[in-house]
Image 1 (cartoon, rainbow, N blue to C red):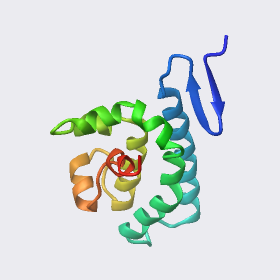
Image 2 (cartoon, one colour):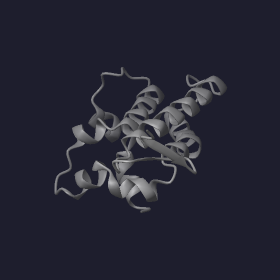
Image 3 (cartoon, one colour):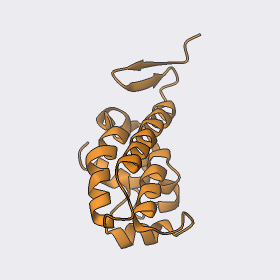
Image 4 (cartoon, rainbow, N blue to C red):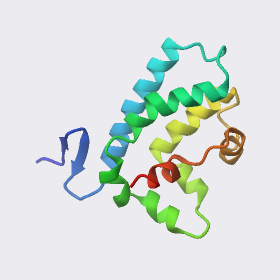
Length: 134
């Protein structure tokens, strides 16, 4: 039986969940991020330049067709709260890719606090920036 189908780069599941799509986009974003790491020496460029490269090369892959799947994910439920649960946002597969890249760009341990990474880079979670364009 068919459990999911892919149409124009978005994975649709029979149960209406976009979790499979989120994992698919995460794999594609990681592949793009690793290609960027092979092409660019991260130790030479400053963090703001690396984050700009992420915005231009990796973020479009991770956020592909987000106008379709973002309203149906838990991200918007978390964003509607008066005080969003950043721990739950950080657990999302695409946000983990984003945080991993930011920690690598800053040269800090992967166990560094996510709030500290967002604050030090002056960035917001990926869900917040994507929500503006939905």
